[in-house]
Length: 143
Image 1 (cartoon, rainbow, N blue to C red):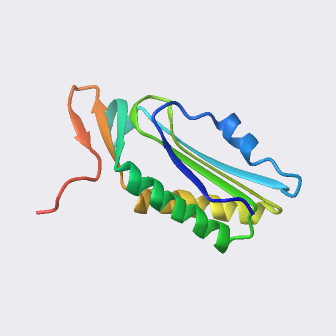
Image 2: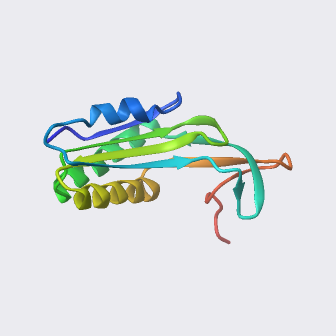
């Protein structure tokens, strides 16, 4: 079993490079997830996104999530990487890859990792709309 790997990146993610890190003759499956920047959200046209984080806490929590997946599922290795900074439409915001002997475990662990990243890692998303308005997504206090 490999060490848990989670990192933040200020440069574009390279899925082919990341996939090579998961190659292993024991693995019979590779499940991946790519989260892309889309050109709309809730009916508004989006021009680009900006991701910010608290890096030390984000990487610590991300490592914890990948370690949990390695213990919880019968997988060989897992890598997750998330972008920070400005991202264009079509850019990869987050990438998760999991290798395992069997596809079911790889799929389940991949889904677990992305869901936990979205709910637990301190990463904030700012949308830049075509109207010139910007807004932090899901950062509004309820009154």
